[in-house]
Length: 220
Ligand SMILES: N[C@@H](CCC(=O)N[C@@H](CS)C(=O)NCC(=O)O)C(=O)O
Image (cartoon, rainbow, N blue to C red):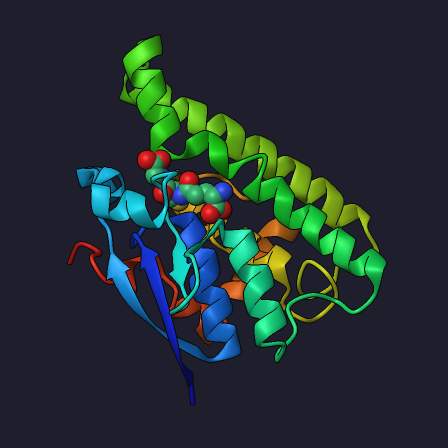
């Protein structure tokens, strides 16, 4: 049964960053209330939301009596410390650093290049049409997937999941690339380890319940 908390999540059904938080909440059995923003409609720039997150991005997690928490990885770290069971980081310092490094490859070096504010800038200031925007995003996804595959295939620490046989932050960050791969109809043959781990994630209920299509505000 889910633990009831006063936590409130601001998300968008298709947001990769909100997905990370939803998976962690599901894995830890934490219930939250949620406000669904529509990023396509520009809800992130509404003054009421900018008061929550001046950056104009989701997710934001609000605990009554505290300033809103933003940045999905900071929120994951908060959840890990506040609700340690089940752990989503290994216990040893090396393992923790490896997991955080794999997560950062997606969260810091891949995903930020595809967010609406970046593609909108390219459209407005660099003349990118829809095809060029798609090409741009795909370029960074393929680069991220290639690096992830090389690392996961090389490292002996890789198991059923990115680090051994337990789900960690790294799987949460990798898992939502499954939707991107399908949407872009990418061939996964060059990324067999990545594809195997994404399939293992998607077989878990916590990931299934975070499926963008099932979220508040998703188109029917
Ligand atoms: N590094 C941030 C990324 C947050 C972010 O950019 N979220 C996207 C949705 S996945 C967003 O709200 N974008 C709004 C925009 O680009 O206008 C995190 O991990 O939370």
